[in-house]
Length: 220
Image (cartoon, rainbow, N blue to C red):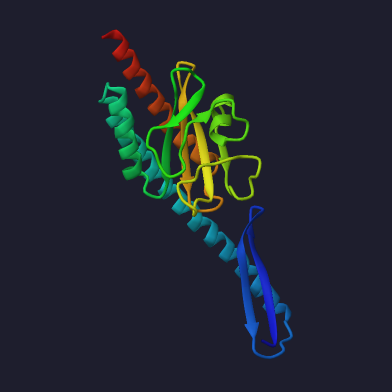
């Protein structure tokens, strides 16, 4: 390579990548070439941004459809154990790009236990200061960690060694803590606040379904 130009693809203050153009021999850039490159990177940045926004919207639409499907099934079951098993199966089917875990607060109100056991899963003390799931339950605030290997302040139970991002959302119904919905992804920087809005709806529906099952059981 005799010469090269590297131009950032930036729009709205967000960096989407770089455009690199090389020549085999030394090259003197003219003003016309500089203007062409300047115009080209703006166009390419806009195209990349629009494409990513489109794909994100498609993803959100699929997730909203999946949320509706899970909600409809959960609302039709009045047995808590049946709901939990159905939810574990449905979330696996409807969200294949994620690993979705449901942690339920036990009757003592001291521990969270996973509905479906997996490698490394265990009861988590609600007052454990390190586990992300426990903190989400205590604070009742959704939490995102988009690179768990850099988040040394937390402890996690990833489904596998490829998990990079984790989002945890509290399960709350009528101001009662039911548990935590944990969503794991193998993509780094996978989750955003828009995901909290969508999956927060799923968390609310799950919590309400579980509470309704408990109320039904208590009325028997």
